[in-house]
Amino acid sequence: MTSEGQLQADFRSDTVTRATPGMRAAIADAPVGDDVYGEDPSVNALQDRMAELTGKEAALFFPAGTQSNLAAVLSHCQRGDEYIIGRNYHILTDEVSGTAALGGAAPWPIEVDGNGSLTAEAVRGAVKEPDQHHPVTRLLCLENTVHGSAQTVELVNDLAAAARDCGLAVHLDGARLFNAAVALDVPVADIIVNVDTASICLSKGLGAPMGAMLVGDGGSIARAFRMRKMLGGGMRQVGHMAAACTYALDNHVGRLVKDHQNAALIANGFRQVEGLGVAQATNMVWMTPPAEYHDALAAHLAADGLLLWPWKPTMRIVTHLDVDAEQAQLLVDSVQSFFSQI
Image 1 (cartoon, rainbow, N blue to C red):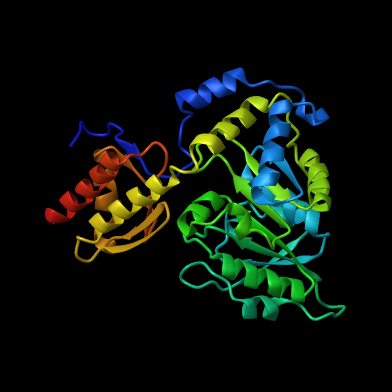
Image 2 (image 1 turned 90 degrees about the vertical axis):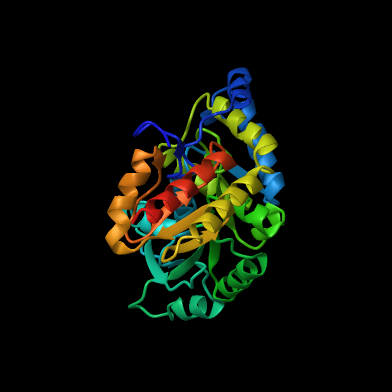
């Protein structure tokens, strides 16, 4: 297919995208100021736009989603408080236990179904009774998408209502919230109308080099503003990056459907291989080969210049701005070729 090892496509994550020529021009031309002083016009314009787009009172620009999530949880919880979260959600599993280490907030994981969804019953059942021996349950943390699976508007609303009934605030990790909105064919604002805060990454499917936005009510964002400074997230002439995010909003939201189509193309091609486990949602594909072929398949794909995460037992493939249908087909052809020779 190619000279061995020459990169053909990188399917490891939608974080690997590179700025397009139009985005680079926007970065270069951006008017900037000192954002720590609130004087960067590009940042201010982006924050205003995101608040309006999401139907929230305010928005705050962060360098990354991990910091945005952390500031949100710390804005809702005091030291010793507890928050409820899905057992495989990113804040719990992949953000270095920052909420506990830096905020003293303890997670209480609960089960999810095959789509990563929680139930209102499980949320209510996880809330601690008032007792001197128990932490105070303060917050429910949701996620959308969850490993690619879009959580419906109705489900998010039901979970938020359950949390409200128990006196909890609600934060939603929406690193790929635009993917969910495109998949569900609804405005982003509809998904998060009943949550207090939501973190939205602009450096994944939308293709900006960096940046996440925390949106929510004015009080929560004001507290998160102080947390951002404490966490080292105050930035100076960061309007250049805000301009990249604005360009992404203008040009890359609608095209997310192409990423979902390419993921479906890959999944459909994999399903032609007998014995290969395949699941797909939005821009993610999960491939589980027979255990005895896992390492050989990973080596075969690497030799064909096709990068993905060869996790065991299930490999992950993510489509994005820098992967087109032809490259998606290369991956399918490579996998099918491997299994045709064994």
